[in-house]
Length: 287
Image (cartoon, rainbow, N blue to C red; front, top):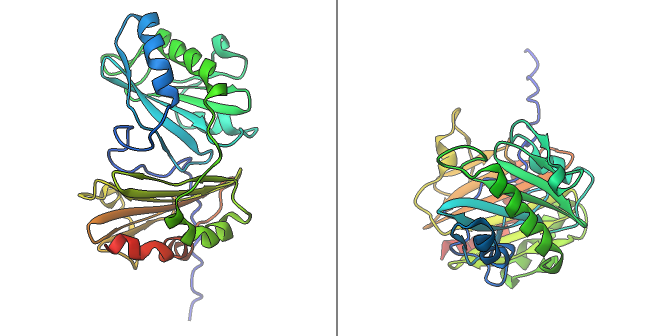
């Protein structure tokens, strides 16, 4: 008999996992955030209406970003600040895949601007200012002048609005041992909160992040329509495993749940690992 071919391991290439639908700051974590702090000053400076959505969230990426949303005349700009101190490659990772990068001396020697975002360090953090509609792309995006002005305003408030690294929900504690097994150490970052009652649990270190995110919009699973189709997973109705994203996504009752793991440098995230992380919380998603 011919030898069984060896299937190469698939290593995730994502910097952050796919985000739950509708996660834009309309709901999320309450409290003062970067966007609410800069919206009014920016309105006066730019002469346009700048508003901030009232809530924040974390993307579960690597680096993990605490995020919020600004609206400039209804054009969305997402501001992200690393939840842990930056690493030597944090700015590069946040800029990856965003197109041609240019130096942005207005924000310092390490700042960069691309067709969609500005990335730069502030003290021990890395910051990303992302224009959903692009930069200097009309009519959907914002111009470069506004992108730089937003970035400067954010730079000025980041040092006084840094959040504690540990924010926990007792429900998430059930999966902490499995999350730490994947991360390989005691976690340095916790981001546990609820969005309209839907649970988010995030565990992280400087080189690994694990997250469980329960969607509050459970109508669809966008990952299901990828080409080629994703692999089925032995959980949920239906369930899918996306090794290139380090993600498991499934519907359990009326809820859609995403489980992801990312590492730097990238390594394979086995399906069994993701099943093990979410297993202790499954009874919550059946209710």
